[in-house]
Length: 109
Image (cartoon, rainbow, N blue to C red; front, side, top):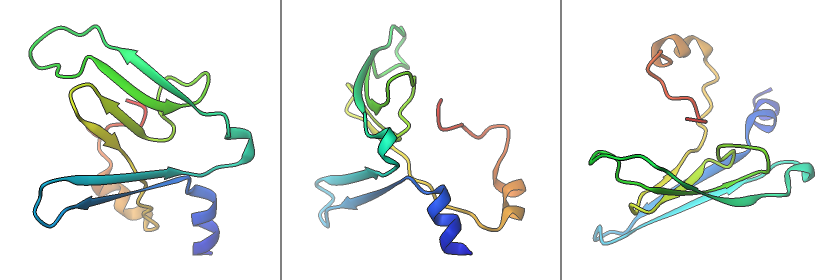
């Protein structure tokens, strides 16, 4: 039963590797899905936000036609920040009440 749940819900994973001397960090992100989602495109958004607290003016992301966000969960900004997400499945649904709050950020934000 656990294997069938993972097959139905998984579509990406990520990895982070910090060098032993802390001089650099490497990230990896991979997405898999059905053949019909093969068409991916690279998007670049020029954000017109003003103010000192907005560091990124441009966001580059992998996505699909018609989508506003990265279903692949991978973003890079001109501020030198890379954002990626991977899913950690919680099979014990009773834990949702402890960790899912109104302050949680949905994946598409």
